[in-house]
Image (cartoon, rainbow, N blue to C red):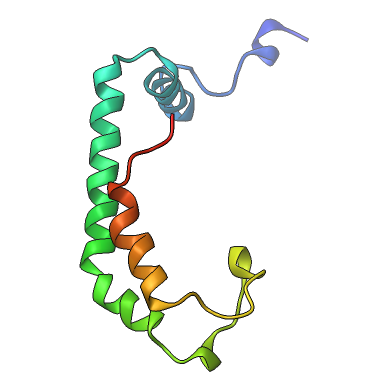
Length: 101
């Protein structure tokens, strides 16, 4: 068995290994805290936009008939849907309350 038989099939400067090395440098290298702060703000704004743009649809679902309620996943312990008032409190007012430290 020669050294050529043990050599990698792909050269590390091209192909998937190069892409994975670049991804590793991007994902695992140290980054300034400002970059994380910007990412958090952007994700928060996106989530706010998603819920805000669909709020009327979500509120209509919350006001729906109780017979349509089938608890699944995290709501499996509920016997009935939450009221529309509770839905409004959770979606509108909760993001503006102070967080516990």
